[in-house]
Length: 114
Image (tube, rainbow, N blue to C red; front, side):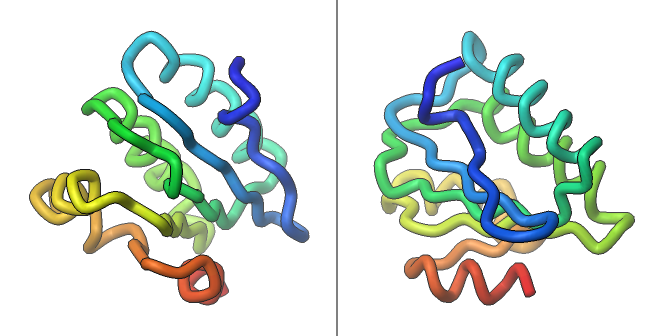
């Protein structure tokens, strides 16, 4: 799995994931497995740095929808920050911005996981 897809712990139950380049179907099974394993270990908050993310396809978005469905019953949340305007628009069109926090700044995104 590319280093960019490794979530790093922030504190108990919260992790930060940095996405870079393109997140397409060829990489999403590994990403999903990694995040679901973290959910099994108690992940309750995921902060996603999308500052260097250029593109994401529907399978990439589905990884985060699946994760949210898994962690939400226990109060889990996902927050993105640093989205470029095109990806921001995708989050708005798909209504993902209504179920996941989408912020400009890291501090605001981190705060939404509290």
